[in-house]
Image (cartoon, rainbow, N blue to C red):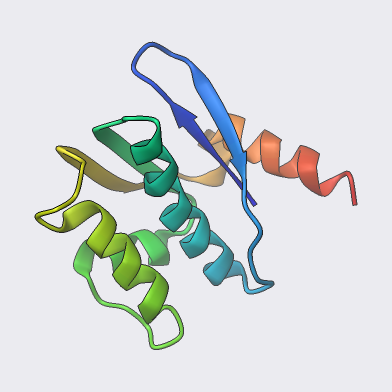
Length: 113
C-alpha cells in the first residue's frame, strides 16, 4: 500500500507502508500513516483522498465499524484533536479513475509480485 504526499510547492514524496490483507483496513492504515508522515515533514494543511467512499464517509461522520474502530479513532485523534499539529485537514472521496498518480503507483507496486 502506498500513499503520496504533495507539498504546496509541488514536491511529491511517496511512502510505502506494510498493512494487513483486509482491503478496507489497508486503506484505513494508509490514511492513518499519511498525517503521521505529513506532521514529521512539518505539513500543517493536508487533504487526504481515497477511492473508498465508505471509509471517507466513516471518517468524516465519525461513525466507525467495530473492526476499524482503533485505526479510525487514531486518525480522529491525529487530525481533529486540540493537540493536532494541523491547522487544516480534509478527507475527500476521489474516484479511482481520477486518482492517476496514486493508482499508477499502487499498480506498479502490485506488478512486482
